[in-house]
Length: 135
Length: 136
Image (cartoon, rainbow over all chains, first blue to last red; front, side, top):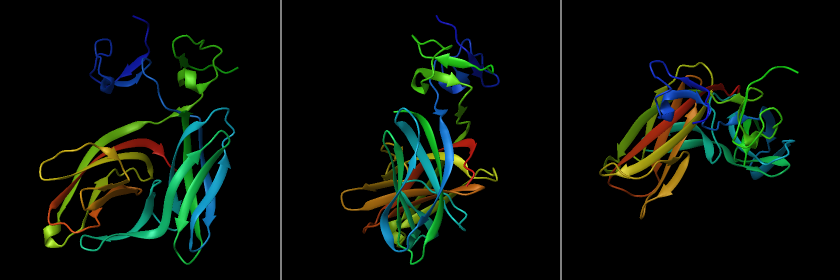
C-alpha cells in the first residue's frame, strides 16, 4: 500500500474507511483544480438570437469549462442550456426573462459563450466561468 | 520559491510536474469546496390543470454559490435515472422541462410539461452546493 494524504470528516477513522464520502480530502482521488476563474461582461444586442462572445483562455490545453450568468439588475443566476426565469405559476408555467444562455464551447484557444436575447432592448450580462481541468 | 503541496499521479515527479492533468492536488490551484448535498421533490397533478411546480431550497449563504443539480422525472412509481439539470426531456407524447436558478439565499427549482397530460408528475432534484462564491 502506498502512502496517502487524507483528511477525514469528524468521527471517521480515515485509516480504516474505504468510503470516499468519509474523506474531505484523499490523495487516492483526483480533484478538480480551478486553473482559471474569471468574470466576463458582455452586452447582448436587442432582439437577436445566437450571439457568440469569445474569451481567450491562454492555456496550453483544452480546459473543462463551466459557467454561470447573471443579467444586470436581476437577482438570479442561471446555467447554460437555460433561460433566466422571471415569473412562474402552476397553471401558466415558467416564463423566461428573454435571455437564454445557450452553451459554452471551448477549443485550444478560446472559450465561446452563446446567448439569445428576445428582449427589445440590450441586456448587460456577467458570466462567471471556471476552467477546471484538462479535457 | 514559495513552498507548496503537490500530489501527482503515479509515474510523475511532484517536484517538476506542471501539467494540471498529471496533478491530483496542488496548492497552486483553488478547488471547489463542497458544502452540502441536498434533495428536493416537487410535483403537480396535470388533471387539475396544473402544468408546473416550483420548489425552494434555502441555503442562506448570502451569496450565489457554485451549484450543480441533477433531476429525475417520473409518473406513477419512482423510477428513472438522474440527469443533469437544466433538462429537456420527452415521454411518448409529453415534453417536460426541469430548471433551476440560483439566488443569494435560495435555489429555486422548477418542473413543467408542455403537452396534454392527466397524470401527476414528479421531479426529484439532487443539488450539490459548494462554498465557492460566484461573485456575480
